[in-house]
Image (cartoon, rainbow, N blue to C red; front, side, top):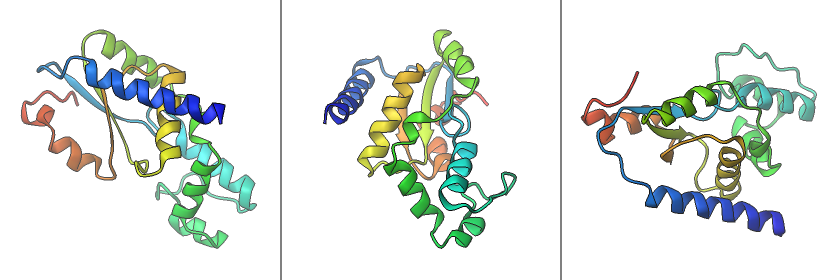
Length: 166
């Protein structure tokens, strides 16, 4: 209970912080994915599935969620991902060195907008995402949960103003 309360508190504090910081005002923008840019998701996920199912998975599979390979386990990639979330493993993902780069850009005044395809309707996922961001010290100004990251980016005011750094 105490842990769940603490996770919810971090989520609420971050939501409050994001509401009270000054809004974007024409500065350069980086839209940054969380998984496999800031967090080492894919290799951690593959290692975990291999351990859980005893099915050896190929790390160089071009399918991000290894859909075809995971069919061999009798469960869909989505079922495995939901169980990964339920096991609270999002909060334990190793970091990538790109966090230092993102934080340096943020310190220079670049607006950092994080995006993730993680399911926003899964409370555990949301809480663990905010907890991980908090614990690893990622500096950011906004976050969006969306499966359509490119569509999201193209629909932003940042794109309309030509502010996205590529």
